[in-house]
View (cartoon, rainbow, N blue to C red):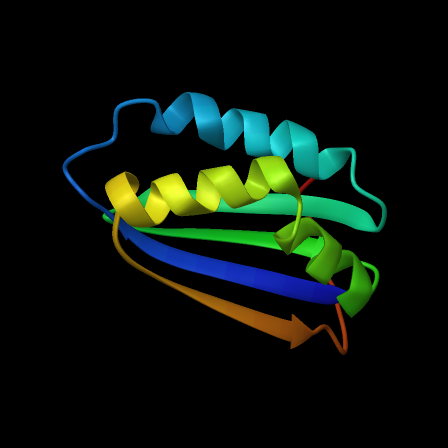
Length: 97
């Protein structure tokens, strides 16, 4: 699997951001190869989405509705952002039951 790590700092102009963020998460869940998403925001935001293939990631990046959100992000919502795409070599977890 692959991880897309989106790290960002929001601008002061966040009107409509929360709504669009939820729409993009819902839309991503409908895309072929989508495996999951994790997100945290405390000053700097980090969202990691997981995908089966690099082709799935490229298709998501090129999605028309996602392109509109990307453009609005650059023009309004973010002071900066960085995207990293990584191959996940191993995964494990701890759950307190």
